[in-house]
Length: 301
Image (cartoon, rainbow, N blue to C red):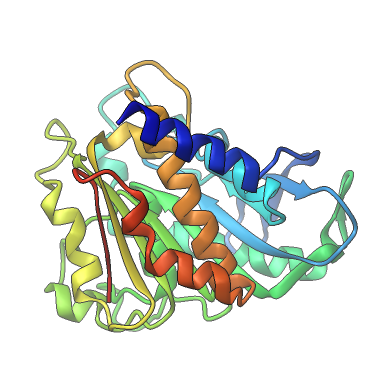
């Protein structure tokens, strides 16, 4: 098993070598909502037009969430914008405000943050050293962890209790949810059956937060099973807990090199297949389960 994992790591390094990135930060004001949305922009090396991937942090998170994944995606030639969501970000830590912030209203605010940022990059040519005219806004991906995964699901087309309003943003053409969870308001088929874009769900056999909610690791597979079939994928990593998928190096995150490598390889193949129309990547993604140890699981439908 050790040799197997070492070989995969070497293969990953050979396929996705490190490259220079330009990183810019800003606080963009949505005047319509009188709301400031902090962003961190990662631009890959070069001057060519590139796909754009947005990343949404989990409850109590910040712009640092998803750093490991975003760095790899930018190295592979994608621009990445991390969003920070006021009202459900690190500003709520302490004082028992986590559960209060995990609300339908905050989820709605997050989805509107995504649409605002897409509007902003469409009209703003630069942010510091970052040339935003390089962004190919015909090729947009959405990703997030935990509450950010719920944000990705809603932006991708999950039905919500907001009956008079759709929160889906049709500019997003593919999405990734790290630690997704079922809807608390609607049956699975009603909630997720309308997601028609390519979607990759990633979870682990220990992906639970019993101190916060009753969502089990098996529950996190339910959105995948309820989505409309076609270009839907599920990766389940044995032994991976909730923190593994945050994309951060921090205490208590027991992510093994194999876990991180599997997330990077699966997501890069997914983005290549969906945002670039790479037929070879699509074929490799379809057979991704063959590259995993027996205790992991990969499904597609």
